[in-house]
Structure formats: structure tokens, C-alpha cells
Image 1 (cartoon, rainbow, N blue to C red):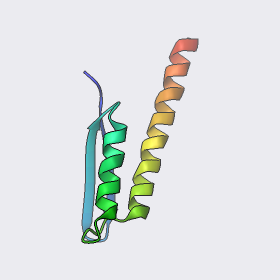
Image 2 (cartoon, rainbow, N blue to C red; image 1 turned 90 degrees about the vertical axis):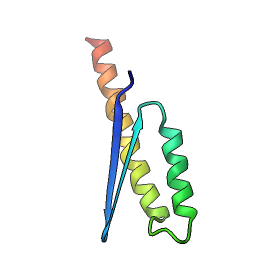
Image 3 (cartoon, rainbow, N blue to C red; image 1 turned 45 degrees about the vertical axis):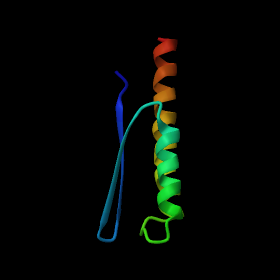
Image 4 (cartoon, helix red, strand yellow; image 1 turned 60 degrees about the horizontal axis):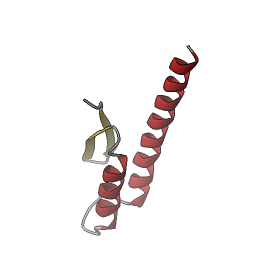
Length: 72
């Protein structure tokens, strides 16, 4: 079973929380883009960028951890 990841963003009175399985990052980025392009949503492109950055940092940490395990 793959790990479940979570990203969250608080913006004004809105709280956005996204849960996804590791390996499904492209799906969640598509969801960010869909929400950001909807002019009726408070969620905008900056919010999508912030959450994408958080996701990238998490992937970077996972890769560093995997590298350390390989090196022993």
C-alpha cells in the first residue's frame, strides 16, 4: 500500500486539504489547475503554485531519504 500524502492551505476563511496517494502527484496537480482556472473559486494560481511547491519539497525529502537508505 502506498503512503497517503496530505497538503493543506489556509486562505482567509477557506481551508483547503488535499489527500492523495504517493505516485498520484500528477492527478492532484491537475486538480489544482482545474480549481485555479475556475473564476468562481477563491483558489487561484498562486495557491496552486504554493501547494505544488510543498509537494515538490516533500518529494525532494523522500528522494534524499531513499538515497541515504541505499548508501547505508
